[in-house]
Structure formats: C-alpha cells, structure tokens
Picture 1 (cartoon, helix red, strand yellow):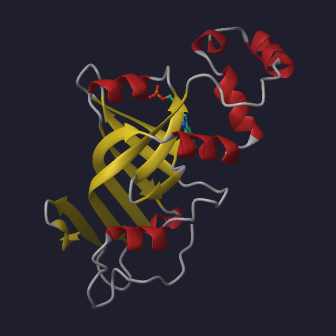
Picture 2: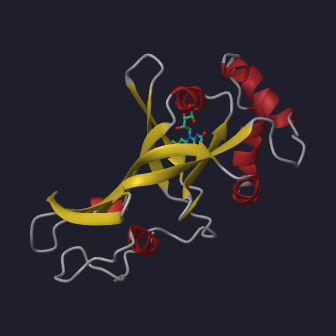
Length: 199
Ligand SMILES: Cc1cc2nc3c(=O)[nH]c(=O)nc-3n(C[C@H](O)[C@H](O)[C@H](O)COP(=O)(O)O)c2cc1C
C-alpha cells in the first residue's frame, strides 16, 4: 500500500473530499495490484458472539468492498443469517487504519471471475482442496494429497464472493506531530456526511 502524499492529508487543514471513495482510492492499492490488502472481516456469529478472521480485500468501487471465500465457510453461513459486516484494514507501521461497516450482498459474476483470475496458483489450489475433511487427516496424508492433487483450471466449486456496501467509513491516521485522529463518513438519504473524531 502506498504511503505517498494523497488527495487529502488527515492531519492537514482543509476540507476532506465529499466522497469517501476518493480517499479510499488514495489510500488503498488499485484493484489490479497483485499485493492485496489483508483485512479483518467481522461478522455476527450464528451463536450471537462476534466473529472475525483475515481475508484479502479483492477489489472495491462504489458498489462496495469485495472479498472472496469458500461457500462452505462459517462466515458464509453467518452472512446468510445476518448480512452485515465490518472490515478493518491496517497499514504497515500502524500508520493508518480504515474501518468499513455496512450491508453485505453477493458479488457479481464478473467480479467473482476477476478475483479468481487474480488469485495466485497457490490460493487457487487451496480454494479447490482445502476442506475440513483434508484438515483432519494425518500430516503424511495431507502432504501426499497436496502433491497429488491437480485441480481443474476453472473456478473452484463453491468459490463465493461478497461486497460490503459501506454505510460508514472511518479513516484513522497516526499522529504526525499531533495526536492521531479519525475522519468518519456516514451515509444517509442525503448522501455522505463527515466529522473528525479523536483517534
Ligand atoms: C493473510 C490471510 C489472508 C487470508 N485471506 C483469505 C481470503 O481472502 N478468503 C478466505 O476465505 N480466507 C482467507 N484466509 C483464511 C481466513 O482467515 C479463515 O481462516 C477462513 O476463511 C475460514 O474462516 P471462517 O471459518 O470464519 O469462515 C486468510 C488468512 C490469512 C492469515
């Protein structure tokens, strides 16, 4: 992720962009950058407790922040029950953080295919063969299966994608000669509003 000077410096004076995606585009790598941001995805567990795990942020645009996973995963069952989530992206050196909260919808077929094409061979193999049944086998069997498995080139069965549609985005920047602070955008019927918050 680039730490280059962007369109709006959270510690400078001035008015933030009206559209938070302008700032998000400045902070996050372009969708075609193979080094995808790692994000913590928080969901509502089916047992009522919060749940969280790391995912790759595959892409984002005005339709939402996309992540991809296995249809048999716990997060998918949780999103079926409560289609709401939060994503947290943390920058190296703890210089920045972006928190996105909102509703989650299935990703488009085009975006699903694009994310599959952009995944490394290693991650595609994982998507094909990484099952609970395999995980329960002794190590020797798992090594043997990994060496022997030659999955078909197409999209793995059960490769699923979602888009988190933001209703709130909070940009946090570490102090630059001052205390850290946050810029929070909230969406309502009239569009986006923003305010500064203590970090
Ligand atoms: C750096 C990193 C990146 C990961 N990226 C993904 C991802 O993009 N999609 C995914 O399904 N799992 C990814 N995982 C694995 C998840 O963290 C998680 O273990 C898995 O998806 C099962 O989660 P669930 O049971 O809560 O659904 C990643 C793990 C790490 C450590």
